[in-house]
Length: 369
Image 1: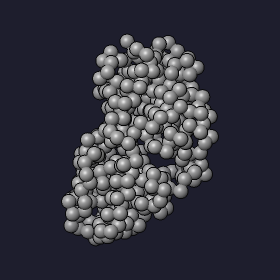
Image 2: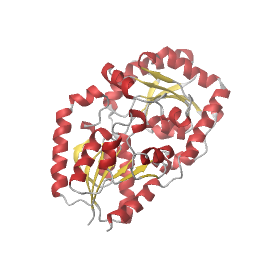
Image 3: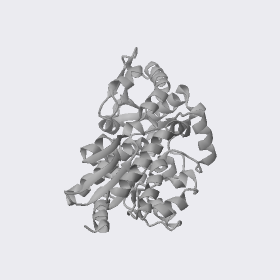
Image 4: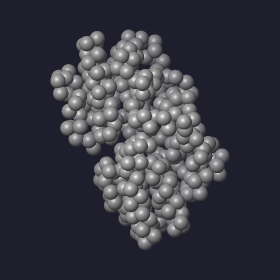
């Protein structure tokens, strides 16, 4: 019976890892999965060591506050790897923890097959040597990453982006006239982010309701977060509603206000133009400014190598500025069309659907069972 240790540390990683697990199980129904993941991975058969909600934090200060918890988890994983007779370790993104986990696996000569590469092209190359020592195979999801990681003698292979496995993202985009008069707000996929962004988004919603009353305003809910976390949006704001099916809402809404991250790419694949924003702690922002080596932070602008969607970060993330951009997207058909054309160009770069199935075949071959 093949036994795989698989580790993801955030909601998007949980989703992509679960798809890979299901693809592996379709080929080998007797595979045993142990590791770290969330509700999606648990449904796919994971024996989880810790709830993902306990480690899904962002920011340097936020990680530092949980240092002892991460240290204890890593020590426990070390003992598991030492005695568990694993055929492979599959880290999924989440480099802060997974790089240390991969190093432990190599110590016990367990193959490390990394899925969704750490974004070293954003954070600088200082981790590249560590990654090269810790990984046997790196499956990357953006085409430029293959050549980037091969520069460091890493066996990297572009496999397409797993979001293309979502059937809805393979449909043609609805144009402006075909979309519903709705502005969709994305506060994030973690409680920490929702709390951090609620005030900004509520004030933006108030301005939008006053200036564009014909538009409905909805908040995209993450399935793993309870309704109570979104109470600040709906209290005293009857015109704001909670949207439980975020994917369908993206496919149909006119415009979004979207936190940076995977949701940027999902919005693009759904053809929904948006304004991008992000707020974080002063320490995280200060350190990030020192180490991030990019002109942009949205995946859309990074992939297009130009400013397609506007970025509102920290002090620039004001309700007034965001609302002005949303109004422009709604009232400027030429810009709206240009943004959708850029989204289509990105979609065409990301390969074909079937990434999880293709990687599963490769993993089954590599573990040799």
